[in-house]
Length: 105
Image 1 (cartoon, rainbow, N blue to C red):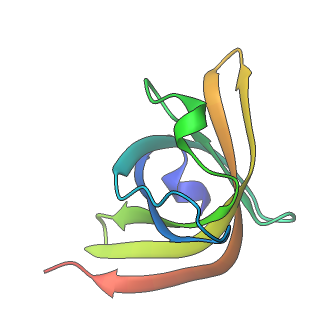
Image 2 (cartoon, rainbow, N blue to C red):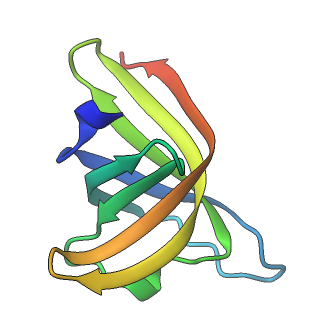
């Protein structure tokens, strides 16, 4: 996953965990800044999107494009942290069901 560092990825809510929680069907473009293999976490910059738009009580699908092999690499996970730092607005996505490939047609 290190090869996707600094790439744009798509983040999309696929399920809410909280009963009666708000389902957001927007697709967000984020920049992957780091993959922590040991903790299975992906660090993402949200750009102009505000952190409160991302729920801590939902499952998200993260999609990366492997242009070399013409494939989408996807994983499912939950956002563990949302915070500001010197790089910008950061999300920490903990991978719970990762990484599977879909051929792009």
